[in-house]
Image (cartoon, rainbow over all chains, first blue to last red; front, side, top):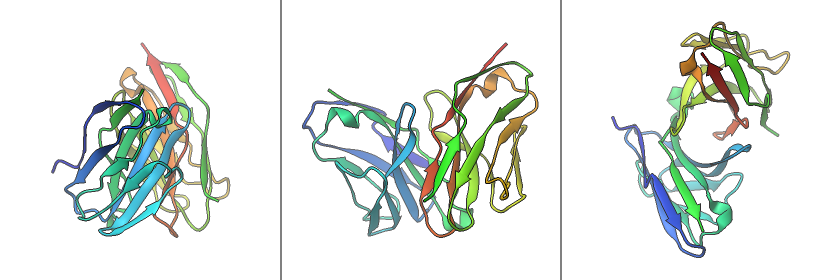
Length: 113
Length: 112
């Protein structure tokens, strides 16, 4: 099993550009989440999904969109990048039968100039 | 609301010293509690967990006990090694939802 994979690992954008961060998992987990990690602030939840076709907002959803068309994939879209979105982004998946233990991807380091 | 509070870092210890990282929580319902570790340049990995009061989670010499009366889940290790240098996150999930709540993380550096 590859676990949770994320692409790209690094990305530099200019203000106003759009892009999609990819996340995939091969563990058949029903729950998937996107977090951003900023110095001194820990991890903050952006969006999450409890299954294909179902998504909901977390703590900091503004400027981001998500969709969940399959169990495996959960892409995060930045509609119009802003310097405040410079961060490290982590995707995670979990399952209720596993006690909701979150399995994390390796992260995407995004810089918005 | 739900929240996790961890002791501020960074923490610097000499090899073989005793480690305690404090974690307290506020939660509705009956949460499960977790400690995650993040090594430089990597994602978070589960270190240990406890799902009900008085449970003790343990892994790689680390331990934490779920204390409902003090709403705490302090991380301890009797003798740290240089390889334990990382950032440690306390987290919870309530049994009424599927959102994780993370503390801000505590950076640990162990020097030889």
